[in-house]
Length: 124
Image (cartoon, rainbow, N blue to C red; front, top):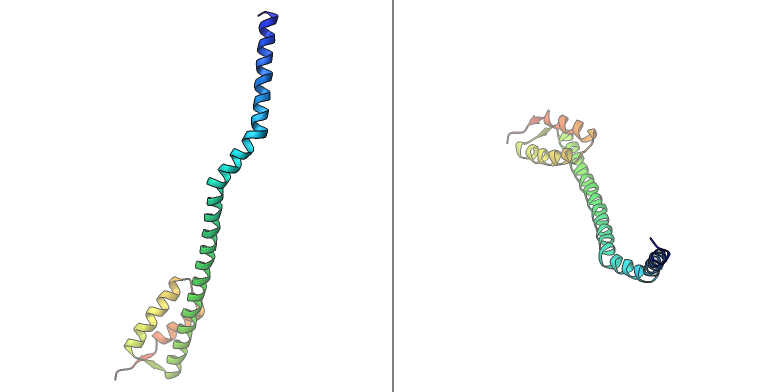
């Protein structure tokens, strides 16, 4: 390879590097900015909305569990005080308790529910 060919090659390499640097400095940032606005930002917004939805869902589940707990607890206390329960009320309480247990309810209501199940059944 002659000196002139080596010089031409060096000029092309340096020129290419300069073009690349200019492209990176002047052209690339707006391209990345545009891509972020078009593709990345909508996903961030979607992820934020999903996070908000999951928080709201969790809050609703906690609320429903609290309402079920209160309802089962109050009903059990009522029937224990009466010392009896009829079949329809027992079935209703069973539905409430099963939903409560399926949502992960604790042992307080389980003990009360078992006490109600052991009560004498009213026959009117």
